[in-house]
Image (tube, rainbow, N blue to C red; front, top):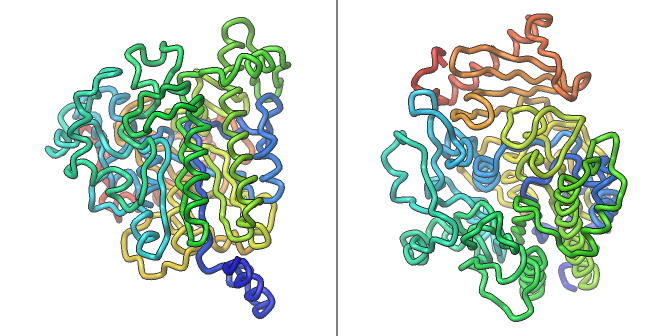
Length: 501
């Protein structure tokens, strides 16, 4: 292929240049995002119960980030990923329907990310990419017209399962502007306001299909006669798109709904395999018995299905000689759901501000360009927007971006030390708080009265020892940096907060 030959020629002529300078100027990009897949719910991060052989093999050829983080729930994570902006800019702090409390103690979340916040698809489209979004979108609400009187006096709600009263309005240009095709993608398969695929069934999570078994009842996925399994269908659509655009740079935003609840077994054979399989004493995965073992076994089949479909994508790219010019990113939108999985190494789970909710698996693969290995540098979802821009050669973007490109790390160079920040101004599993992480140190400040917790995750991964009293100097240092960050960015606090900033 012409682009492959051009890449080989570049390597020969520019042998003394950096790795990325010798790579294709506009690689294809495949961004695969799982939903609620935990940090160690994959083999390459240490699980001995879940089975991910394709991802494990890919990880051997990839740069694996050992300290990758997202927001603890999907709405703020996806808003941050797609816009490259912190929660206080987009107004997305957690999933709106999960919020608790009143408007004095919380800043209730927006569901819809406003047009003023550019999604990375727009500059990439302007740069010549063909783009498709597949699967979970979740940065538009069911009723965007109710999100205009800010700050919200009460949390947002959603229609009941199988209530289609919202659909006609969502097909109009007025609301399609908030959908993938209104934000720069050329095609959308399955993206809407839904947080999980069960919403198309009146029984929701209790429906035998759960939205994962056909018919999917998703109005943005046209039904096909050969439909069986949602994760397979989304992957088939992704491969079809790549095949139609393999001569031009393509961007595939493959954001699986899986393995989010409900836990639906991919097949009876796969379910039986994981029920019979011994659990992992280290993580605690698969150690339950009876119905609890059946639940995590069903979840394991969903994880295995994601892995099988990653294998399908790799097989297609290899067969079409596209691997050398394709960047693959794999990660998850937040930590594991404690109703589906378990991890004895981490504190808490999805929704919590501890690392069970924040840590995620992450890898980047680009054969002959990105050197395989493991990197302990703390990175976050905010970094992907600037990373995509750098690797695709877009240098004229002028929007606000709160992350840093992984370019130096992919070149084998260190990323200058920096702090990572979170601001969660509404209540779900924990009260409103801000977080700063710098190296192994992590400080949480709760926004009601300003009380703090300090952890060294290098020596105490499980965050079992609050060191704020025993390490006052470190606590003071990190708190000062956190407050300065809030002050510089005019970060809003809940009305009842006693803090000045």
